[in-house]
Amino acid sequence: MRAAKACCVLMMLCLPMLAQAEKLTIAAAADLKFALADIVSAFKQEHQAADITVVYGSSGKFQTQIQQGAPYDLYFSADIAYPRALAANGFAASAVMPYAIGRIVMWSARVDVSQMSLANLPQNQFRRIAIANPRHAPYGQRAIEALTAAGVLPSVQSKLVYGENIAHAAHFVQTGNAQAGIIALALVLSPELANKGSYWLIPEHLHAPLAQGFIITKRAANNGLAKRFADYMGGQQARSIMVQYGFSLPADASSN
Image 1 (cartoon, rainbow, N blue to C red):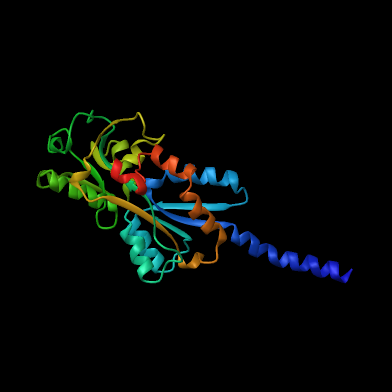
Image 2 (image 1 turned 90 degrees about the vertical axis):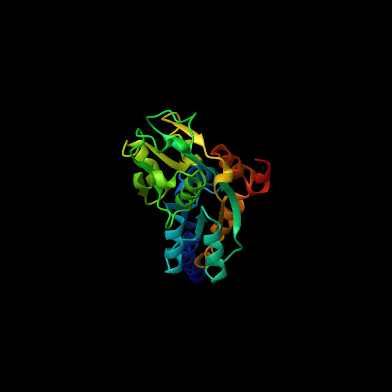
């Protein structure tokens, strides 16, 4: 009887640890808002006990927060340089894992821009142009690079309005607070924005590649669920979802 009671007590003591091991908090670049939601949903079909929270925002801000001790187990960045810097400074429990190459587009909810280019942005019909804040958002940095390469940055500089992240920039355009924006292809292809405007795919040669990568953070070194999710990202199901949202995969980026 005593042995049975002792066993029950031991099991009760272990339950909190087991529950904690099945929790996962992910910090993810805002371009992943829809793709990662689909991946998490597919993952949970195979791991029904998994308790996963995803926070979306700007890659640069997440890097700073992780350095300051923010409780994230996985960090997905739209610029692989950020997780590489964290790994170099001891904030990662894994190697940096490339997961995608992103693309940027010129998008409008009201003007047909499908046959236009960045050269059209100085026109009067585009009074405000939304981009992500280039100080901490990789998509904003690439937008500035593309505008510069296209030779139109001086003409549109005063029109630029800055979102905290790429999803926020898209919201400016969606609500009419900007007549056009330079945003992520992944957002344009999402259920929320698909068929609600038009876009022009910005040529890759106008900006540096949007090579993206993720890490398991140091705080999640013993989190088995973090490791399983990281492995899942390299599987066929997750890769197919990424392609569906317009991402190129690291292994085949050269063929796109």
